[in-house]
Image (cartoon, rainbow, N blue to C red; front, side, top):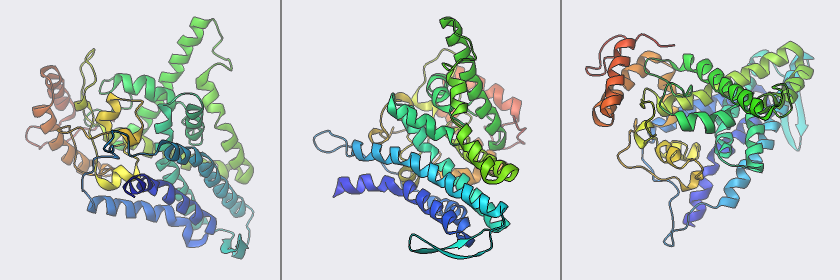
Amino acid sequence: MKKLFINVRYFLAPALIFVAALGVLAGGPWSWTGVALLFAGILIDTMLRKQTAGAGFDSNGSTNGWPRLQNTVMYVMLPVFVALQLVLAWRVYQYINGVPIGARELFGFTIQNGITGAQLVGAVLSTGIFAGIGIIYGHELSHTKGFSFVISRMMMALSGASHFCYAHVYNHHLELGHQDDPATAPRGRTIYGHLLISHLGQSKFLYNMEKQRLARKGVSFLSWQNRWIRGYLMSVPTVFLFWLAGGWIGLASILSVWVISNFELEALNYMEHYGLIRETGQPIDYRHSWDNDTMFTSWFFIEIGRQADHHDRGETHFWELERVDGNPNTGWGYFSLFALALMPPLWHAYMRRQLAKWDAEYATPGEHAIAQRLNRQVGYDVASGEGHVRSAA
């Protein structure tokens, strides 16, 4: 029974993604279900700050996680995300063609036929929010090989970000905490500025990696072997679907979904390593990540907050990740931190104090020297917790 509960608790995100999709399908005010769930998540995450220790292991040393079950759930999420986009495209089609508002039966349930402009906005926001949350499965599978890695690329392509799978593993995990890692947000940067810098920076990394790799093989950059090009081609069916469904409004709808989902992806990168510093040539250590092991965040985000252990053992499955005692920890869940980051002055006021502690207790002498220089550059007086922050982006 204990193992059953441990495994079922990771179904929280899949269940809510499914509920958000049903909301778009049901139409009417239910189109805003995903938005309402986001606010509910922020509230619950803020209230439940209890720390958890991960899935753990039994008395025989075997993981409490059920690999076959957890992998199956992650694979199933791909058709769920496809269905989510198909339902949204159907709603866009109804809006463009002026389908009259009314009730209709679908699979024995009554739903609203037709959709208003306000309801379509809710459907787009709900789809974007939960497509973004679903990226956690693309991240988990990006650390695998073969079939699972292909599934990861297809998941990320649904949000126009298939480059992530290579950039995350071969750039972020090797350059964490350094200026060569676009996914690590330096002190003073806002979450809004981080979106394009990180997204385009990771895409540029794969572009350059493929350019060099293909040149060594004597293959033209404009080749089917180019994984940067192939990744973006994987997003073409989605673009075509929404163009057919609603022309320019359809394209605006899917672009909005992509912006929202990628904003959430980069928000995770932003919160996981904000302001942390690693010297050139020095190894990545536990201290270069903000751990996050509050209960709701751990269950909802399938232990993605155990960043210290994740970056130490990148190919370890989420149900095998463990708490690293004494590691930097902001003390709040991802939903709570996300809400805080949306208000940069409050975010900087809080993180100044967190970074003051990191500088004093975790930084090496070399890292401390870099921190002092960066603090002066951005007006980040972490010693006193005072001063005006000059945004780095």
